[in-house]
Image (cartoon, rainbow, N blue to C red; front, side):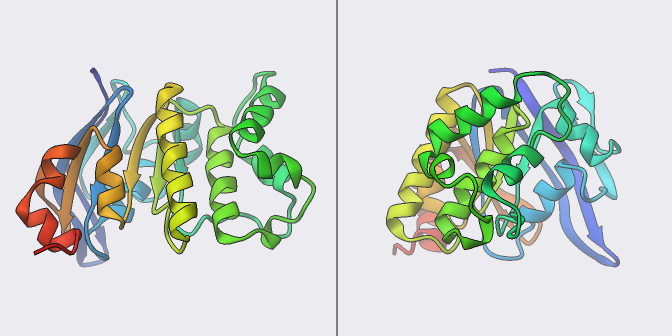
Length: 237
């Protein structure tokens, strides 16, 4: 697989605090790549920097051969990189359909209605309740909406930040199954997830972050069988 996304020696700081300390990783076309680690490891900061919401203090980010680390966020979306953020960040007073259409704000083609129906096919509840205010949805339904909204930009690579956060085990399984479906439909996925076991089961590759540094990497299967990962992140002795 060719590298769709290349992050090289990335450093990101909040004032004098260095949150990401020189990390390097790649995401190949068609892969699911998982970043795992505890709170404060730098996972969300990494995604926010890739999507242009933060600026790196050092290093580079390349997407499909183009440097994007100084490109405005809206232009990064237009290049084909979408970000479904931690905490969903839906617009609660707007309808489900209005939230979805916002995901297509940067598009200028005529296939938006087609993609709206594709989101409804993947998440039927969104279609059934398309006129309902998004704030009345449960956490799991809001996560579906956030993922559907990211799909509306027709991304080549979708970044998902903690999609299972606060969800029931049943809803978490459904969301993870959807990640697999998106991959099978041709979308490359960069997944940040506290549930390390679920994330690594899906992943072609995984990277373990600790206090802003990558400390382990390998295939999903390799990391699942790693004693260090099992003790630190899977609750096994």
